[in-house]
Image (cartoon, rainbow, N blue to C red; front, side):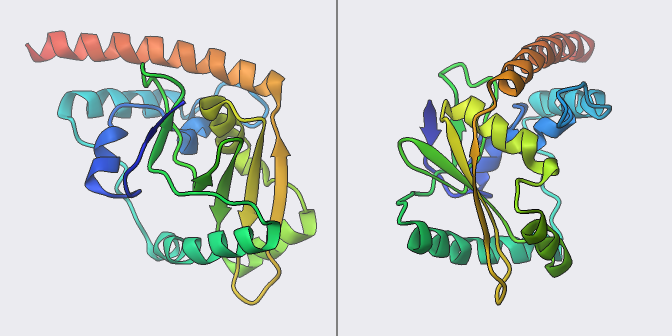
Length: 202
């Protein structure tokens, strides 16, 4: 694993993610059941466009996202206090120096990672009652383990004033093998589309 030490959402962070599939968007490549996603083509074409322009298009932000970012540090401190697990912040992780795909954990150490969500109150309550990893984050969490090589990942859902949800997700080898194969095929097509666009641009 290779890490990039920079502040997430900084210019350096966005630049490092240009044209590269990231774990937060692996759901656009495969579904939680490991099937091809209907969003795959749009995601691929967007990344190909980024490679040519050199600009990361993933800059959308709304009030809920800003709120989540503000609460992230609070949730991370609570997680460390409750679990006794020391973690540190990192900008980006790649599986190797080829940097074919990445993830941006909310914290890691030498053996495990952390993903924090700060959803709206009704969503957080639903997560608490279910007491498991929400299906919508399966690809991100398992994908982060693919990128880092870790065998477990901590998931935290946090809402001030309510109990936090803190669970440990184990590595799903079958899902990760399927995801890795899908990423290889996706990147092969991404390279081909990018080259075709370069020819058209010339």
